[in-house]
Length: 78
Picture 1 (cartoon, rainbow, N blue to C red):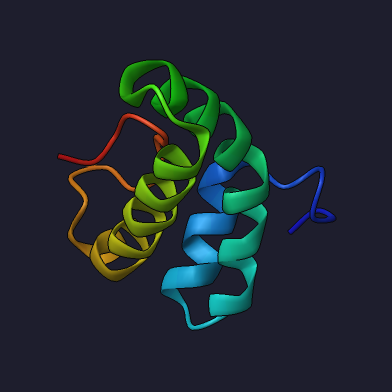
Picture 2 (picture 1 turned 60 degrees about the horizontal axis):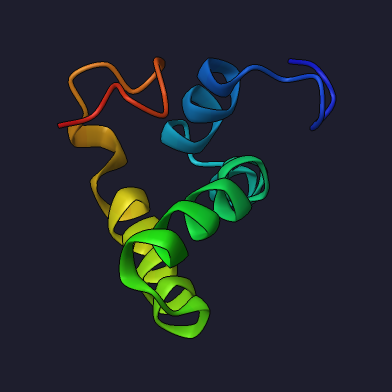
C-alpha cells in the first residue's frame, strides 16, 4: 500500500475494513473541506455545516462495511 497521500481511496477503505481504523483519517482529510463548503452553501452557516459534515463522516465510518461498493468512494455507498 502506498503512502498516505498516494494511497487510493480503495486502498484506504480496504485498510480500514481490515482493522487499520486510523487510516480513515486519510479519507476525512481528502473530503471534509469539500463537503463542508458544499454543506455551508446548502445550510447557510459554516458552523452548522461543520457539525453536519462531522456527523456524516462519523456515520459513514460506522457504515463503511455496509457500502455496496466501498472502494468507489465518495459515491459508492447508499
